Length: 69
Figure 1 (cartoon, rainbow, N blue to C red):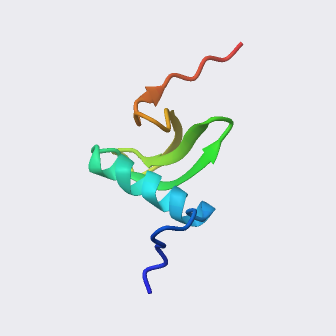
Figure 2 (cartoon, rainbow, N blue to C red):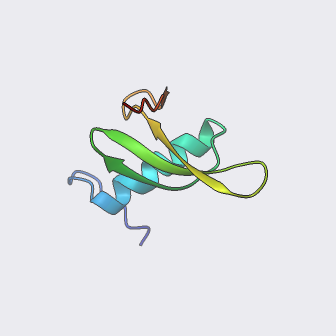
Figure 3 (tube, helix red, strand yellow):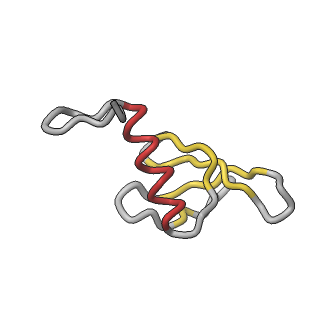
């Protein structure tokens, strides 16, 4: 079983895997993703091999700029 249900609510694990795959289809090398504070928090592999947290809109998968105050 692939762990995906039809006609049932998705589990948190299924949602995060779907989000990770959706980001990767858009060319974002997300290694992990989770729903967090109304957005998708993803760990994205950089060109030098390090990972950096980035935030994305869960409806559009567009990046959300981080603003520190």
